[in-house]
Amino acid sequence: MAVQVDVKRRKLLEQSGKFLTGSLLSSLGLPLSSFGQNISSYPNKPIRIVIPFAAGGTLDAMIRPISQPLSTALGQPIIIENRAGANGMIGAEMVAKSSPDGYTLFATSASFVLNPSIYKDIKYDVIKDFTPISSLMRGVGFVLLVHPSVPANTLQELIALDKKTNSPLAYSSPGIGNTVHIASELFNQRAGTHFLHVPYKGSGPSLNALVSGEVQIGITPPGVVMQFIKTGKLKALAFTGSSRLPELPEVPLMSEVGVKDMIFEGTWMGLLGPGGMPQPIVQKIYSEMSKCLHEPGLQNNLSTSVSGYVVEASTPEQFAKKLRDDIKRYNEILKKINFQPT
Image (cartoon, rainbow, N blue to C red; front, top):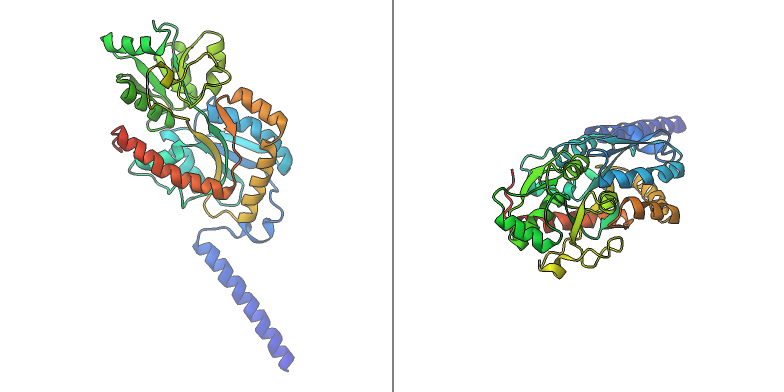
């Protein structure tokens, strides 16, 4: 009789434990399938990587080559989805609301941590609503470009042209408050110029505006513009890094041509997931991604398609610290250029 009581009591406790676990996960809005037995079998279906900018930009040029070996390593197809708009906030909000099961990931740049200092009404928290996986690459500087129609072949000639022209020269950016916008406004401040900001919806449209002559100036990561520089469709006048870019050894640093204190090494590109992702899944994605990034073939591919960046492959913990540090750093930069949140 005692044995029967113990059996019933044990079953009751097991059922209560399952109920409490299920209730807790449900109250957190987390699906049971994201945890438990599905962790060991992850991934067992295609993985989606959301890019919050238009196709054709630097982030796009980095993620697509990486996704191929990562797909092979994980044994599942990887689908790239561009969700452009609102300086990356449309794509970010969609990922923040996704299930944290590892099947929706988020590839983004430093504009992600800029937005809290730029916009007053963001519908997600960049720390609480996302799980850092890895910072994949980091920038070493931006190149200042002009359309061939601009009668300036040096940076000093461009600055002089700005001061004597009646209509302001315009520069393009992928939107308001991104690193291109900030670098350009820092240049305006340091050089004493008055270049007019013309924002576009993404890096691709921004670059197209410069190449077509719709705007005259661009300060941008060098990766996607190298072909236009080499073919003479754009002129490179200066570089914002701390040392000259090996791919453009003839292009001087800002400090070498009279614009002091204008070192801006640019952005990073990283991978996150929705908040609350199980650590075993995070570690699996990070581990496989890190292996892919250290393959010589992929590194050679990235050095060509994403010039001006170097592979970083930081751990989830290192990336989490970078996010927190950059929120503070960019907030201080925005204050220096008197940027007012909207």
